[in-house]
Image (cartoon, rainbow, N blue to C red; front, side, top):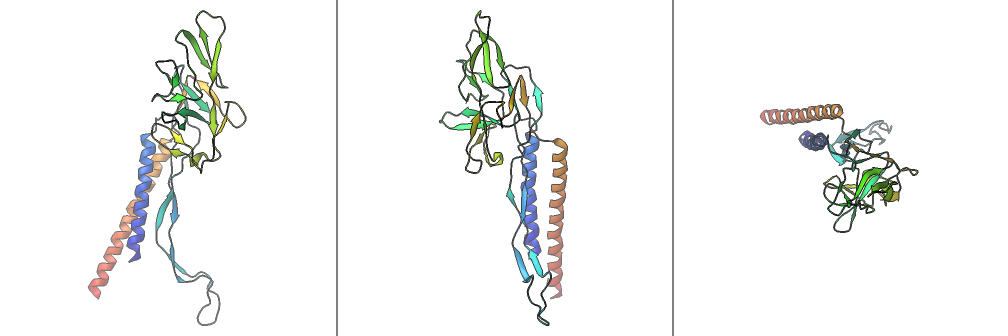
Length: 261
């Protein structure tokens, strides 16, 4: 009975949906996290009577036909790249992006990764790095005898060195944008990688056309909304239960058929 396989595909799809929702909820307080959603697609149809075919008796065209579907599958799990809530931290090396763009991060193997997580630190040599010690591109070194670190909205990093009366500009934080942000490959540690689907990174300064601005002493929190995630979780649970009931009903119908045979 096809209903068994069809309902089973629905259960598998909702199981994956729950896994995605659970990951979103787990990362509600993850800096720069972008939630995912499950996109569903129906499977192949069996044509028992072709739509638009001629009827056997008078030659009239069949207006609707008879098609039996074979279930559902998860076809994609795109990232929702909307802006997350920006919260004040009071830490001078914390930087949030307000608008479009990603920070560029240099990995030890020479690859460039991208992140919305601006919880930066100073390395032992004064280099501006991520929480995992990866260099923020382009490299900016903060002298040990400096004070009053400031990062303006255009990404210029300035400090007062020694007994100087005016600030010194150490460098410029740059951002990268992509034609298709959802095409980025997700990795652990809040990092993304460029792919053929995302398109090549377009690098520019904060505040330029198409690029967001920077906010010092603040961080962008996850864009996960607890209420909508719980609502989606309940819907997924109900859909899973309904598919399991279909399997139970189909099994009982098969038992009835066998007993009457």
